[in-house]
Length: 181
Image (cartoon, rainbow, N blue to C red; front, side, top):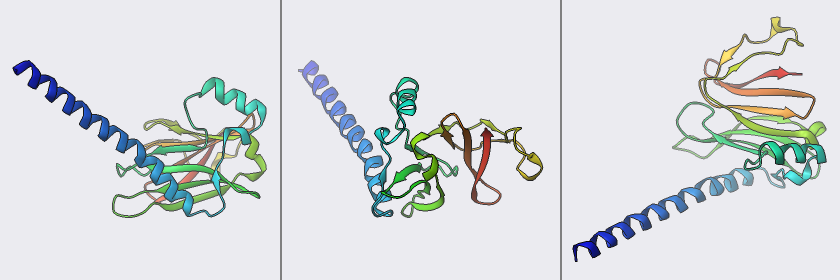
């Protein structure tokens, strides 16, 4: 009888854990739907909307990642935020949204990437990474190297350039640094 109770307890605990895991997996999808509802006519850019060389590169190097979404804490408040490449019939944008605990996600940064849309993809940059301006650009007017205190967003323009966007705690804004040309 005691053995039976232990099995029942184990099944109940596993059932609860599965329910929690499934509800947690739905959270980001539901949040993303809310984010997209703010941009009528736009959709998350698909892998198929990219150049063939870019698709091949992404499939080989990042097969389990979505090259159009970064879901991480950008502003250091402990809550996951979004960076999303969105597209409609005329334009493609990188949109950064902060998602505080007490309110809906709010768009804090947008940049048009339409001219390079077929070759653009995004990835997270880990906390603690050092980000500095490329030597190809006059650095007198640009910020000195920084160590990220929260996750950054790397935008790669395939075989052209890389730009890292990060939350600047002093200015309370997203800052861009071109790291490669």
